[in-house]
Length: 383
Image (cartoon, rainbow, N blue to C red; front, side, top):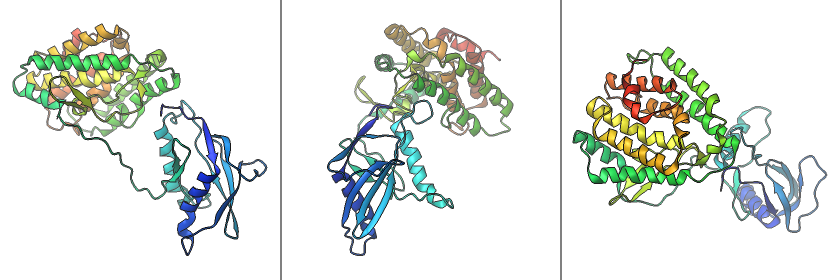
């Protein structure tokens, strides 16, 4: 299901009755309910007629009054979904599920609040199912064989930056892969605005990371982090209207989420933060790791990891001809640099490495166009 690609469906009599029997069946002493659906009408309008087949054009975001008989008793409930409203954090199916699950969990703990009876979901063929007893959700996936790409980077580090032919070929393959998926565009200015906004303000991104840094660190102060946030907000307003750039993305394209098998055959894992986004997110996610591993290996941006970095950018820019990428990538690099500089995620790296990563953050925030060939300067220049 595409983001925001939900408008209306048919609410069918048989499916509503089946759902009501399953939902209220446990309440009967015998476990059997003689439930008959009588009417469905939009809340606030005159009661609907008895349903013969279904309510055509059942609308998302509008509450419906369902009247039914449970044996001799007359009952009524309200069924409501969320309006698909772009730009206010309800763009994705998962956003709307999050809100409704939270409401079901909390309505009944607030005095005088209308009671929640259940939370559920529609299937593609119009069936209704309960999710009200859920405690946690899970995802079931196929099993893939292979090794994480981070194992390649660790081997290169152990061998003091020495590369094999395959190392170059894999960097090329990853670059070509991103170039290919990023060519698929999508038109939704609100989703692009959200992507830029979330990169700055979401708890998983820049502001969530800065909040996770302890105080009294020798290489960064709370005041420094505040200034970084302020500059990122300015970058948000600088780049947010490049809505034509919205494209298919992975969203968390780092070496732990790439599984290689023989040669350049690979599978990606754990796609994150929406189907559509900014290409710079994926590019920065991987290339930041080449910078990080070069610093761990040599204390400077040199050797094999620099070659992988340069190979990746060369191929990507040739394949996409996306020169604008270099003018919007800055806050995305800040996000990824804050991850690898984090004392929580990487507690054992030396303070000197962290200082260079913060040099990088400050320097790229101060440049209008990121120049890959000047990465050493961004790391070394004290800002």
